[in-house]
Amino acid sequence: MSKQARRGLLGISLVLPSFLILVLIVVLPILGSLKESLTNHSGGYDLSNYKYLFTDKLMRSNIIFTLEVTIASTLLVLVISYVLAVYMRFNQGMAVNWIRRMYMIPIFIPSVIATYGLIQLLGNRGWAARILYHFGSESFPRIIFDMKGIIIANLWFNIPFTTMLLGSALSAVPNSVIESAKDVGAGKLRIFFKLILPLTFKTLLVASTFVFMGVIGSFTAPFLIGPNAPQMLGVSMEQIFGVFQDRQLAAATAFFTFLMCSFVGYFYIRSMIKEEGMRSS
Amino acid sequence: MKWYLKSLGPKKIIEFVALIIFVIFFMGPLLNLAILAFTGNWNYPDMLPREWSLKWWKFVFQQEGVSQSIALSFLIATIVTAVSIVLCVPAAYAFARIRFPLSKFFLFSFLLTHAFPKMGLYVSIAVLFYKLGLMNTLLGVILIHIINVLMYMTWIPTSAFRNVHTAQEESARDVGASPFRVFRSITLPMAMPGIIVASIFTFLNSLDEAQGTFLVGVPNFRTMPVVMYGIISDYPAYAGAVFSIILTAPTIILLLAAQRFVSADVLSSGFQIK
Image (tube, rainbow over all chains, first blue to last red; front, side):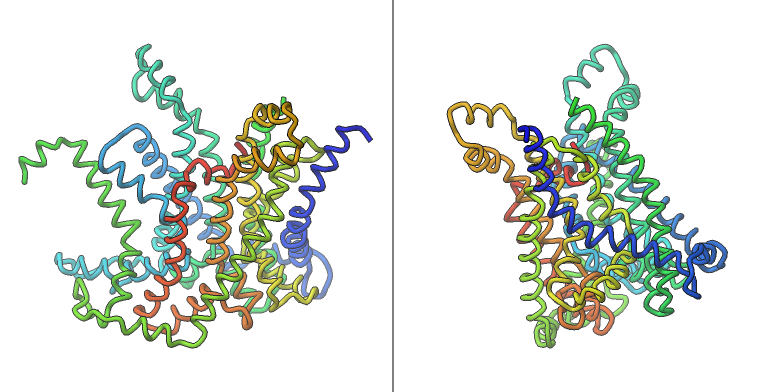
């Protein structure tokens, strides 16, 4: 056997154990749920579960609600995080130092705890309502058990993470490049659109992929904070499985969400593979 | 007051307002829980509680199963971290240093763990685990916890190994060090910060995992977050707040201890191939 073939074999044998675990706990269950989702109530195979997903009024409103929450959360997270990260990259001072010291904390707080804290803070008799009461506001907007609550929770979970990704990408933009652009007379806006945005565009794609995937399949926050109807698909999936015992429909819902994630993931993987190709050549 | 604001200039004022919003939004929920945990009674609409007390701490620790759940969570998190290091670090080394067929396919396959909705995945896994007899076993719970961390645990060390310059390894080889010796005394120590961050992430993730454990491990394996779900629904907010602090404390301690390793750059490498 040639040396190269031996190295290749060694590579595969190092990767194989973790890949086999992946097959056992992720790939097989996904295939199982695909098969389940195509099974109809009389035991044959057809698309009836998917048809139900798109024709049932409640399920349709759940899908629309989930997409609305996901898209609104993703866009808000990206815009706020980008502004925050760019500001932190190019400014110094007390405020920036404080934010830099604190912003990564939420990434490590368990989601159950954060959601619980948000409920206590923003509930209709929560701390925020109490404080506003002393400033003369009698009524407090309904945030918990509403779409607003889910979006706020998503911002809480995802802004720190996204700011971290973007911050790391922005710190890789060399100061000298920006200085020399300034020297040839480029304005702030021009530097942003011609230099900073293109150099960080890939990370923006990475961030939007993970925020999208995280929000669309989320369970804890919408389960504890969301309204009873319409529901996010993660919550509705759990209910279909746990309360209605309809495994096939739950599987179809899961698989539909997976297809949405695959669509976003496709662009992510394409951009990553391009990068990998450049490395090895 | 007015002249003071004027002397600061608009930029400083905007910065200050942004900082206040940031602190209220991100720290408010946590601060609120910290106050609630030491409250005896807090009537609406008082801004702060009038009665402070430690009685809810006593109450929580008297609950059956709380101290066992803490011990169990740490045991499981330790096993999960050890197992995933053994599984993923060799793979990461292979991705970084060895050219082999289909390496891109293997590398990106770990993204699947994040692409399929967790709830749907857990339901399918439960079906599979029933067939394999893994329901309500320690092995089943550990496998469920590994799902969440396979990706970081592979990608962060991959990028850490890639950042070790091959020139250094080669010069050690030139003076006659064996491949194993080079790995042990050059490659591994230089990639260590990345491996440490990935391990911390894994440990914390396992400590926090609730949904999967609930589905696969109950009733035998009640970890801290599983108990937390029960406390949220059954007891007053004060008890929930106390338990939140107990559940968050290890996270804070571990992060403070590992502060010098945990950087945005290293963490970011867990989500992209750099």
